[in-house]
Amino acid sequence: MVADGADSGLREGLGVAASEKSYRQHALICNVATAEPHAGCAFERFTDEGPLALLPLLPAAGAQHRSALVWTLPPERAAQLLECPQDAFLSALQQRFGYRLGRLQQVGTRHAYPLTLRHCDEQVRAGIAVMGNAAHALHPVAGQGFNLALRDIWALCDVLAAGVARGQSPGDLAVLQQYRARQQADQRRTIEFSDRLPALFMHNDPMLALARDLALSGLDWVAPLKRAFVAQAAGLQALEAAHD
Ligand SMILES: Cc1cc2nc3c(=O)[nH]c(=O)nc-3n(C[C@H](O)[C@H](O)[C@H](O)COP(=O)(O)OP(=O)(O)OC[C@H]3O[C@@H](n4cnc5c(N)ncnc54)[C@H](O)[C@@H]3O)c2cc1C
Image (tube, rainbow, N blue to C red; front, side, top):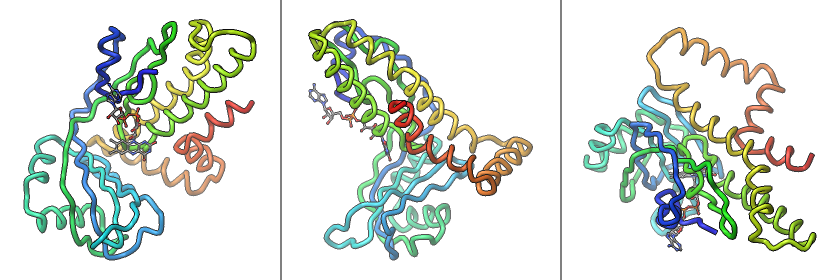
């Protein structure tokens, strides 16, 4: 199995091609200590610079309430926030995030990296399966990459077990192609979902913004629509499809 991450050297060594699309945005990531507990909740804010998320972390020495920040920004703004003093950083973040977790108190080491969508069409060869970020590295905004990787692994295990039960070798290309066929639609849907979500919030057209805001309000009013959106975001549709 080839699963050495988005910059997979093994994939490259095998000559497996990956298509790339730059989002021309950077993700600034760091841990943040907050005055109020997160109660196990993740928070996401969609801003005109890009989405930002605070994801719950376990307590650590000196920081009882901690979250991991993923802040999507234009590259020059990310560079500025990477270098600025802690107070200026916390104040900028507080302004964008608000006070849902109380006052933001401390920030850990900040890192930033360019955001790119990578995906390979060829994911199996005889004896080889390219998996996880090596096969598809997504925009982190929708928090889909790891979930998709787990669904891929589940499907692969299922297909391998069925193949072995039929007396086939687990590395048999025909068996591995069944895995690829089974996961293709889930991968396509998940990639499209996480690719379109950031674009939805980052344009200056007031009519598009109005349509988006109405659609999001509609999610609150129409329970089945909201359930469908949450099911897609949580990967539940794909799991249900696998059980059908
Ligand atoms: C900021 C951020 C937030 C995210 N939030 C979410 C989320 O909320 N939900 C979600 O589902 N997904 C999320 N993701 C996506 C998730 O992190 C990835 O989808 C997941 O880490 C992919 O796992 P992976 O094992 O394929 O790759 P990686 O996590 O990159 O792991 C690859 C591993 O391979 C190792 N390695 C490299 N070369 C070799 C080698 N030659 N031999 C052996 N090992 C090697 C590396 O050391 C590394 O440990 C997020 C991603 C980011 C960047």
